Length: 51
Image 1 (cartoon, helix red, strand yellow):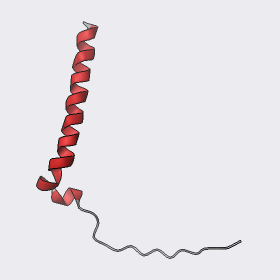
Image 2: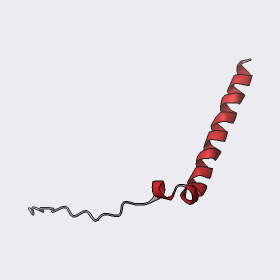
Image 3: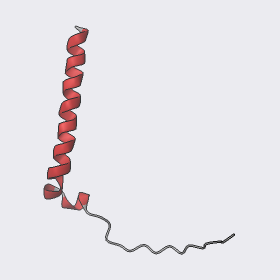
């Protein structure tokens, strides 16, 4: 009984991993806005102090 539960959890983990890999490869074709980088320039002044 416990062995069947472990096998089922392992199968679900493998299936979930394959789903994430498929989403990473196919996702940009169906959801391009979710994978796009931000299109705004960020400028932050930095003060460096020497010793």
